[in-house]
Image (cartoon, rainbow, N blue to C red; front, top):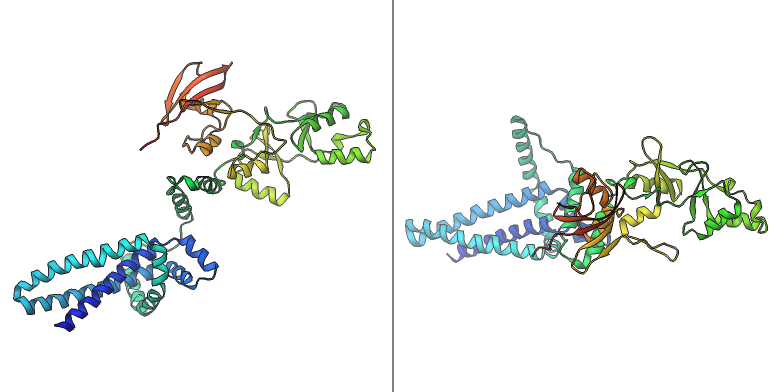
Length: 419
C-alpha cells in the first residue's frame, strides 16, 4: 500500500510539473528570452527552441499529462477499492478531483504565471529532454491529425502571420497603458510601429507655414533673410511661391560669401541651390525615412496628385514623430495648446491630431483629417459658427474663433478619466 501511495504522489508531482511547465513556457516573455540568449544564457536558448516548435512542445506536455493523469487515477481507484470496497470508486474520484484541481492545476499554474520567466528558465532543460523522448510519438500523432483534417477539407497552417505578429507587438505595448513609468517609451514604440501607416502629408509643414525665399530679390536681401531664418535648408521660388526652383543650404551661402571676399552683391544664390526633391503626399513615413537614408538628404518638397506644392517634410519631422518634439536654440516656439484650470484645452485649429494624441494619449481618429479644425469639419459636415458645440468620440468641442471659413481656435474637453 505504501508503494502505491508513493507512486500516486510521484505521479501527482509530475502532473503539477506538466501544468506549470505548460503555463510558464507559454506565458514567458519571448523578447526577454531572445535578449537573454543573445547575452549568452543557454537556458533561454532552450526556451526559444521550444517556442520555435510549439506544436511539438504542447503535444508532448499533453501526452505526458494524459498518461500520468490516467495512471494516477487508476492507481488511486485500485487502492481505494482495496480499502473501502465498491465505495472506494466514489472516494477515489472525489479525492483525486480535489487533489488534482488544487495541487496539480491551480497551484502550479498560478505560481508559473507569477514567475513565468524564471520558471521557464528552470524547466527548460528537463522539458527539452522530455520533448526529445516523446518526439516520435508526437510526430506520428501530428501526421494522423493532419490526415484527418485533410479528410474533412481543413488545412493545417503553421506559417507565421506577419500581420498577426504586428498586432501582437502593438497589443503588448497597449497592455502597459496603466504604467506611467514607461509612458514615454510606450509612446515611442507605438510611433515606430505606425511609421508604415502614416503619410508625410500628416506630419509635413504646410506651405502656408513653410519658410521660402523669393529668388528675384537682391543677393543682400536674400542673405539677410537666410541669416534671420531658423532653418539651414530653404526653398527658393521665382514668379509664384509654388514655383520652387531649388533648395539652398545656408552653409553653401556662407562658403560662397567667404570665397567672394565678402562681396555679397556678386553672389548668385540661385546658382548655389540644389535640385528640389519632390515627393507625393501619399508616401509613408517609413518609405520616406528609407529614402532619406538612401539619398543622404534631409529635406523634401511634398506635392499632391496634381503636382501642386503642399508643404515640406524633413528628416527631423520623422524623428519627432517617434521621439516627440525636438527643439534647439534656433527653433521658434509655436503656441498651439493652452491648458485651462478646469482641465480643458484651448487648441489652435492647425494643431495636428497626431500631436494631440501623442502628447495626451488621446484616441482621436486621424484617418480623414490631420488637424483639429479638419476633424471638426469632417465630423460636423458643415462649416461651424463661433460658439457651436459638438460632441463626438467622447470629447466636447467648442468653436472659439473663426476667420472667414477657417477655424482658428477650439476649446477641447477630454472625457473624464475612468476609475
